[in-house]
Image (cartoon, helix red, strand yellow):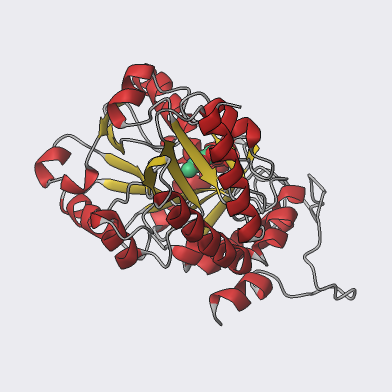
Length: 381
Ligand SMILES: Cc1ncc(COP(=O)(O)O)c(C=O)c1O
């Protein structure tokens, strides 16, 4: 079966006499045992829940992965993976990852004896940079500067040095990019974004093909307890049915918005790998089936960015991405406010940077909205 068909049919076959076409929502937290020590598949929902099992099976199938674990948010998924680390470990991060991920490692790693380094120009990584490193965590395309990291290249070096490679694939989903196939050991998702697609559910996933890693993560999932609820499992699998359709439209719209901004006299710079400029474009085409629905840009110096944001009628000013609606955000004070200002400036998250999560609305409406807001921002109205 192809991806689009699997997205609708995988993970569930009607088994009860009711034969509904949708997965059943199993809200029970506990399940009856026939006798002492007679455990069935389901004992207690923190360990296993039928509705969560359906969506985990579906997400694993779409990723062509052996294992998937459903968590209560993207940060719960990242935290689960960080739960594998121990005192003395050292982790390398690419220079602009989601602010919540930065908040985690910059505040909690040192307390637990774990060291970290934030590395710019990740594609220049060589084996020597991995001396003493136990894990690499990358987000590609990165957030919010949309820099593309060459997963194949990094995984080859990581394997040589026995370093665990973790990829946050939230911006892509398995529809566009499959990091395990490219050599990663673990993939994490905020499924709050494209898998949900409707900004109404918090969710996360961790995927792997490695039996040992899975056993450890399954233990941690039950122990930490931040599992994906049955209702959110239901909403996520419902969202996934239209993921390929939505994603195709996100890509089309984002490409047109990027081209429009790139050709606009009052736009200084656009960050999007779909613009045919240099390394990002080449690497992205070699490892993914599209450039995603998120892009960032900087308006000309004499445009008032506050006026611009307030003048938009369709793009709402809000964090997050991946829903059907278009959003705009100001990374330095919103998604990435946990980065110290000096680090923001060093890695290019300038105060004038704006990030768009391009939705699936009519493209002419989106371009018109941007156009009128840019004009107003120039006049300072
Ligand atoms: C790339 C990325 N990873 C992880 C997260 C965290 O996900 P959640 O908000 O579901 O905890 C986000 C949230 O914005 C994100 O953008």
